[in-house]
Length: 320
Image (tube, rainbow, N blue to C red; front, side, top):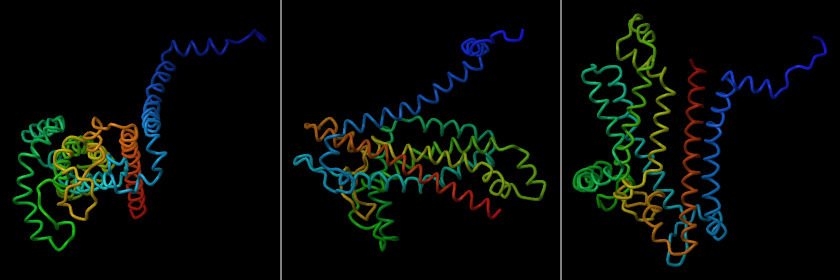
């Protein structure tokens, strides 16, 4: 009847809730918003619990090289250097190995070989980091000290990166341990992404006369590029935040040096080593500020990497 009052907004909303669509939308929105809430809470907690350190040192905390708990003089630069160098070298080692293994397992290996190897790789991804640290101490460090480091010094010793005393522990050893830890992540995710490429893409390339290898490198891998990049980001996040394994083989010396043979220190390692020993409020706040620096550093590095990948993708699309 004309002029009769229509249903109220509350009734309409309740009707949508009963239908399920609105309820599902609201529930998933809450789940998505919780990610931002958790991130904001982490930042706030780190920020407020590092107040004393921020007030005393200010921005100089980021580029000061001294870390002296006795005289309460703290700077984060050696730890930022160790974190960035070990993660970068680990990625340089892990990316070609991981992507190459993923291509083999998804495109070239028979199923009777691919399936058992994939199972073993997934097991490696689940191994606790302290186990990698123990293996690094008892197996990798002696090998690096007696074989790998002397070989690198003999062949590439004209570069500052491969000069200096060869203790076995150091930045390069920590990078190798990190590379071993993150390779399973790259392989596992990249393999699944490569397997998700439609079979029609492969068949079309083969029908045009391409070899199996050509179809893989020119069709399958470019199609799965974004997923492969995602696996690298996952590995980078693991490398930046790794604690125990790095702590056990990096040498734990807060110095900046041009040699990968030299001992170093990472942000996660110094927090794990010294947090229980912090006897003053300023010392505790300096360690918490290191955690804040690591959090921001992770965001910046991942953001820059994504921008580089986006720029590269656009350039390739423009030339295509």
